[in-house]
Structure formats: structure tokens, C-alpha cells
Image 1 (tube, rainbow, N blue to C red):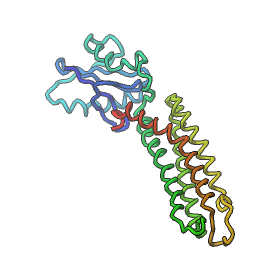
Image 2: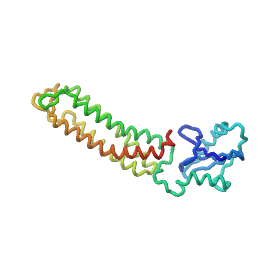
Image 3: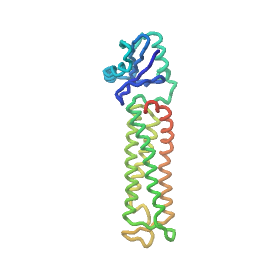
Image 4: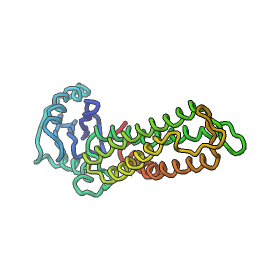
Length: 260
């Protein structure tokens, strides 16, 4: 029986993988009948990762105490059954049929999975913070709010949007590293809009034309102005949120086996 393992650099251990390997992977194929492990390096793997994986091969071998395993390291001239096994798991890399498999490193897959979740959640939290304004005191079609609550309301969304901007920037770097154009484009849109939202929110008390009766400590804001403000923010967020939600779904469909 042939069993295929890849070296998970993120967890620093060998894990079994029967279906697909990445071009940066180091692969070990165990022939249990002949008690031999064959090593294969992906076309984009490096010597440092190979040495690190090989140094921890004893942990993999220890899971087969009844076998007297030998090691064979080669990049070609594998036995026919080993070559067939390799061709099966690297078919998508070899033929290029799997166009969705863009990421090729465990590290970038893990970082991007965290980053894109943050990108989805943070803008939602920011908008939820903004719509708390609908619960302010209402009188004569105007909202009444103290300056303390108002400033906190604006600052909370600015902070969340700034963090989103940071994660979008991280994703641009990941997209460049992995040559993933969709990640770069979606993240660049997010950077531009997030930066615009931060500049917009930085206007603070000048975001609204306060109604008659406002003081330095108590603001009166027209319901119409506040609704327009919320709709503008929602529209801006949806421009980058929708494509990134699509990317999140497609990403986890493709890479979930490499994340968990």
C-alpha cells in the first residue's frame, strides 16, 4: 500500500494527504510493502524546507514501529507505481487544469484565511456601530446626541476601518507573493475605499450640518442627513465586501484541506 505525506511547515510535522499537493510542498511516499520512503520536492520548493522536513522524518517513521524503513531521495526515475502515485496527486500542478489553486505555500494560505475573515467581519462591525445612531433620542424628525457619544461613535468606526485597511494591505502583499491577481484587485479596492472612509469619518463634527438648538455639548442631527450618511457608508462597504465574501467562499472551498 502506498501512502502519501506532505511536510506541513506551519505545524512543523508530516501530515497524510491523498489527493493534492502544492508546488512548494515536500512529499514523502511510503511503500509499506517494500518498507521504503521516497522523497519528492515540488518544482517551487527550496532546499531549506527540504532539510527541515527531512530532519523531522523520524517523527513520521515512529508512527510505523513495525517497519524497517529505508529512505530514497530522487527527483526522477521513481519506480512505476511511485511515479503513478505522484502523477495522480500533482496532476493539477502538472497540467494546470486547476485554475483555482493559486496559493502554493501553507504559510500564505493560513495568513490569508485569517486576514480575509477579518476583512469581512470588521466592516460589518463598523457599520453595526454606525447604525446604533438610529437608537438616539428622536424629536421633531431630528436625532439628539451628546458630543461624547457622537465622538465615540465616529472614533469606533474609524478604528475598525483602519484595522480593515491594514488587513487589506497585508492581502495585497500576499497576492503579490502568490501572483494571485484576484486577491490583489479585491484588496486594492478595499484599500482605496477604506482610506476614503477614514478621510470621510475624520471630518468628525463637520460630517453633519447641525440643526438649530445644537450646543457644544449636545448635537441635533436631521434624520434625513443621518440616513443619507448611513446609506453612503453601506454602499461604500458593499463595494469591497461583496467581492471579498465571494473570494472567502471560493477560497475555503479550494483550500480548506490545507487550513485545518
